[in-house]
Amino acid sequence: MKRTFIAIFLFLVYGVITAIGLYAFYPWKEALEPKIIERLEAEGLTNVSLKLSSVGPGGLTVQDLRFGQAGRESVIPKLWATYTLDTLRAGKVDSLVMRAVHLRIRQAQEGWTMDGFVPAKETDQAFVLPVTQEFFDGVRVDDVALTQGHLEVLAKDGILNMPLDVAFAKQDIPNFSLKPAKLSFKGDGVRVSGVLKGEMRLEEDKAAWKGQWSLKDVSVLQQGHEFPKGLMAGKIHADQKALRIDGGITGEHQAYTGTFSYTYPFAAPGKATLVVNGFSMPWFEGVVSAHRVNVPLSGKADYTLNLQVHRASIGKLIQAVTGEHVKATGTISGSIPVRIKPDGTIVIGKGSLKAAKPGVLSFPAQLLPGAGAQMDLTREILKDFRYERLTLTTETKGKDGLILHVMLEGNNPKVQSGRAVKLNINLSGDVLDFVTSSAIVFSNPKALLSKERQ
Image 1 (cartoon, one colour):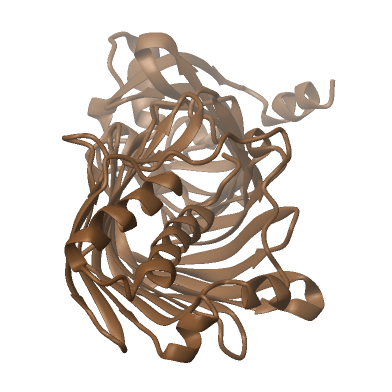
Image 2 (cartoon, rainbow, N blue to C red):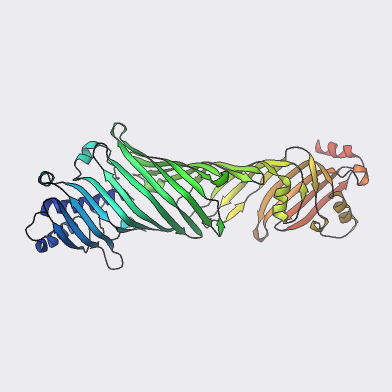
């Protein structure tokens, strides 16, 4: 996309202003309408129709301005322009107000287009953002406002809708502002909403536009799961090379926190990047976090992140997997690799979590299926197991989904005189499957230590 939405907006404004400047005092309104239409179509609008309701020495009013094909029209129900004789002689107007504008922007194979607008044929030269006062001195209006409008963006991966209440002013320092607007985005299995506002000002000495933005009351519904509402806010920086948006996000009651940066190079739009610099959230009474995650923007590629787990509750985690009440003391820390597919599916890789220190673990007998003397002994041991070491490893296996391997070393003081034992258990879904009880009950606890040294 070699023209930004700002460029399209200014190009539309330029056509309207040019028409007003050339024909504002044309003797007859009926003859003036086709002249304005002709000029607007010369600027790239298609199938233009409008009604010129008033023309005077201080202003002009246009009603029901439409352009585009049936079913794909852009509409401006009312447009006002104010001017003086001096500004008209200079080929300019003082202000331009467009109310209830409805614009529809589409993402096509060739790039972004606006309904009813056909820009001049693009060259191989990249879009260059204007960053000088001299450029804006040549703009033929001092103030432009879109009020009570609506923007619809039809992207390949979803639809964005939001109100339009935008203002541009070039006096003193050129600036854009967007008043609070409640937006909504619907994609494949994803819904996002929030209240967006922002502002940008030209810093000519730095050859850049700088500003701030915020998205309040952020609500995300993905694959039927609703995330806690949050607040996003950050800064905007745009120069002649790229647009960069930096920001942070904080969930209600600190449900999550994170920072990110988005970069859009004008010369190479396909190389736009989104990097999650840091993200963390509470997880089973501990914290899970990720750092420096590159998120693909094509929507066609997987991406991976390495989740860092810090001091999560062993008991809460095992309960979540088994669906049964499991008593446990202690916490675990480590890392879990995660792969996220374009459709939002999450695949857990081989991770490893280890207990910080010795503790106590108690499994309900019904979680250990099977019969026989060895199983009976294992159930008895796990009623009150005092572990010295506890390791959880994660793995995803086809239809079985997530499997949690639990390795335990320790003893039950009340079973076989507290002799040392090593157990390996699999937790899969809501079922605990006892895989191997290396239920080696050592006659000599020192044997376990000697084996570990080999």
